Amino acid sequence: MPQDSYDAVVVGAGLAGSACALTLARNGVRVCLCERGAQPGEKSLSGMVLYGRPLAALIPFFWKEAPVERPIVRRRVAVLSRDSELALDLRFEEFNHPPYNYTFSVLRSRFDRWFAKQAADTGATLLTGALVDDLLWEGGKVAGVAIRGGATLKAGVVVSCEGTNAFLAEKAKLRDRPPHRKVAVGVKEVLAMSREVIQERFGLEGNEGIAMEFYGQSVRGLVGSAFLYTNQDSISVGLSCSVESLIAGKIPPAELLAQFKRHPA
Figure 1 (tube, rainbow, N blue to C red):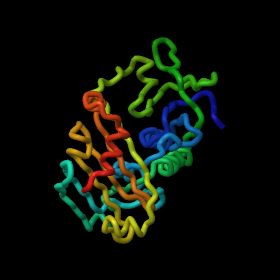
Figure 2 (tube, rainbow, N blue to C red):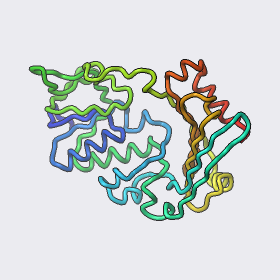
Figure 3 (cartoon, rainbow, N blue to C red):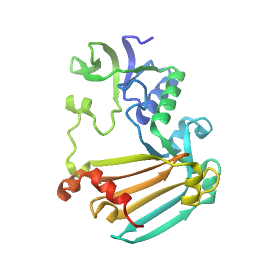
């Protein structure tokens, strides 16, 4: 059961937050991991390519139990013109065997739940549906957090793992809002596709996965790139551009993604 006092409170049960809570719990720290969603991963509906070497230092052989999708055996980097493609396609047979270069496609909604559970099983208190609104201060020092609805948690240490939108840190004036040139906006779709079609379309065998990156006209020459990678029975496709270039280009990200998916190459 949640207490009202801990040695440390970690805000955000994403990858950084769960790793932090797991490490603290292993070292005997009474830690509460606060997640605003009804469960970890609820706000992370898309996927990612996980570069898991740091995770392997925390959980050796994590891929044997974690809900990873496919090991990334092939990497393809392409520059697109309006109707053509120049590409470098790399395949590493070594990455098709353990430890798979520690690189896998994952679906965050599944993976984040699993990772937060590792922290909870180690002794961390996982508090879901807990939107941390503010820090508690005593004598000019952080003394805990205030949760929307009136609850408070006392703690000598608060670790903010909110991600890019670090509203808590900004509200406490511990971090300035980053300028547009230092922030990117990404859009992504997860498209259902049968395993058989994925294998045939991308030239894959067994459980192999591919991650593809596209530059140039994939984002209409803006500062950014597009990407595609394979999951078990879906593909993740999307793009990311700097906010500054999107404002200058006056192109909505969703429109950019639609154009990228129509590219003839």
